[in-house]
Image (cartoon, rainbow, N blue to C red; front, side, top):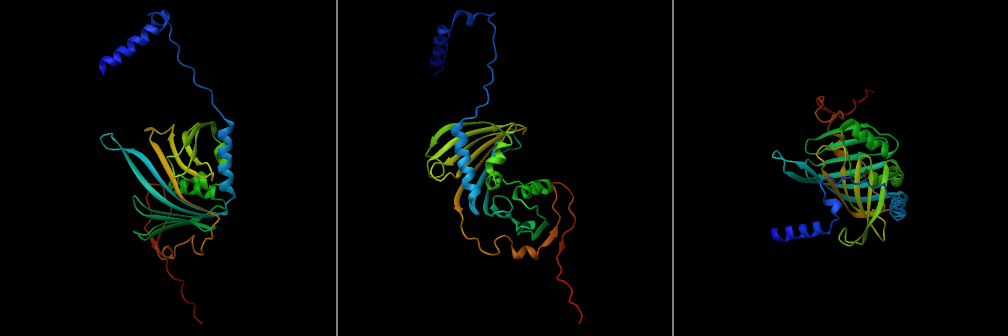
Length: 272
């Protein structure tokens, strides 16, 4: 194999112009390619956005895998499952059975709450009127992040367009989501991603992303399955009665001191 590699390199060298082999030949770095905004890629993204935005209710499962370095530097991969239900314009339920500590996140249109059943703890705060702002508030208050945030936005393409610098069509796949998908590559200042979108139903099936400003340049993947659109949502979906009896704590960023939990007490009975 080594002999073949060297032979190939030697043959390639013979094919180069003499100037390219001279010691004093100037070497010019390759110019970066100009950002590409292909109409075909944008059309596929717009169709997916329109399909999602038109749905009054959304349900899906998002299985996310992310990379973290072990103590010896070896990359390890962890996964979480989010079972998501959305009722527009301002209701959300995210059940996370694992991996990690199972938890639940609810937005009922007025409040947002994060509930950890195993610890019987809940944090409750006033919710902004739009889901996009709710998710921003959850990040600011407690670093709660959902990798499917753009999917449940009122205008997914509008949110993406705020930072989109490049989009081009990669090709067709039959290996993702059990359906034919179109592969789209997108990039902005902070993130570069590849998105698999169903050819027939225009629904996202998979996203792989890397963030430019992250020191480890870790890779993230989210697989979407069990899609349901415009289905009836049962009353009580966006709350858990058990959370009402849980000990209350404040939303807080990781590592911040947390006040001792307080257990809700029933209102005192009024004397006649």
